[in-house]
Length: 424
RNA sequence: GUGGAUGUAGCUCAGUUGGUUAGAGCACCAGGUUGUGGCCCUGGGGGUCGGGGGUUCGAAUCCCCUCAUUCACCCCA
Image 1: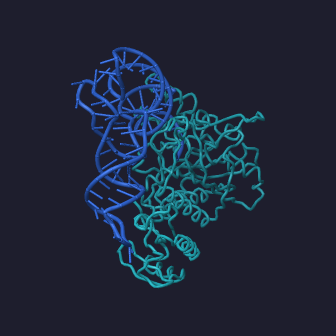
Image 2 (image 1 turned 60 degrees about the vertical axis):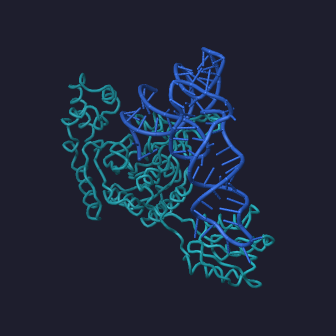
Image 3 (image 1 turned 90 degrees about the vertical axis):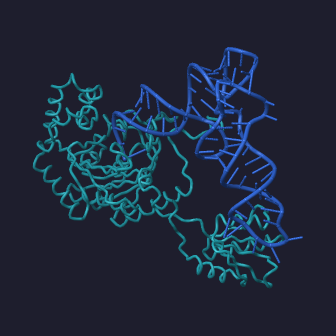
């Protein structure tokens, strides 16, 4: 294939059975979100660029990794790089601040970031995320955390560990920021190139530098700067999560890439993905709605990387197996076979028939690969109006009346009506 | 954006110091078995050796460029 026709860098085609796993996970996510009282929200795949720009001046995802274009009308548009800003925009634009609070919303949507592809980092990936608006109480933080860990647990991940930190509020964060900058200022000659940039642009991120570990070890801890309200907020949400059976630990070095976070930030990793790669993350963003021309409204939410979760599960999620019924036919019985297959589908069976004009032998061979049973029409070994039914797993076969109801009953007796199984 | 590794059939890979029409296994299709699969046997389709340029009598093999994949950094899901 010519290179200019290939799929764009950093994107992927997802084939079965993985595509079935995606669908399975999506269903699980929707059901779980619904159980927590969240409603699905669909927003456009692109927004006016200002929606994301306003919200992430020093955010790499927004600053350097935007897929932006100008349409013929001269409007600057950006392919959605993350979910929260778009959901907050929809909250404001649809006047949801007038709806009964809190407003609980979730989404399952593609995200686009123009970055260098790497293991489990794509230019288009999918996130399942949820946001709760209108509640400042730490119970909201705890609730979205429980929703997020419930989804990954149900998907088959054992004991997700939430790493949490508080970035403080406008009351207490400035003092900490100042102390941190002062600390690194003294050591500026000895710190790495990246850290010098961080020092100027986003000092909090000095904390997750992997090079200057010793400098980091002695850095001031934000815990010593929290105001009483921020401290109480974190204590309470951790208490609630623990009471609910969640596993949560404070990580003093956890900071996250989006500037809109206030107070709570959290992340869940996975051994298989390595330290640097988060399975999902989230936090609180009390100033975001206001910055998008809405009323001062608190909010908290998370985003789960669907591809990363699937990878961490490594095929443990059950999907539809190869199963169903193949209606094969002797020469001259094409029409009868085709019609019978459709009647069996109306009985709820997964059903195939030959559409390639193949020999009976080739049909049975094909049936063996994709079906559990074969129904043979036109066999001379059966009486008039009868068909041969064959269990392809065992090789047993018998003659029976060619009645769709009877065949469906036979199939369901042998294979069950719910034919899902684990495919590795 | 920076640095390293790798690109031969749908998949996994051979291809010796550059040398005739580029191979294997699996997969696919058809037959061997006159009524029916999974094993075995035979045959078949499928590759401009990622693309472009150069060196050479001759390049999958050597050199340059480019594209893509992959790993690490940055950052994130």
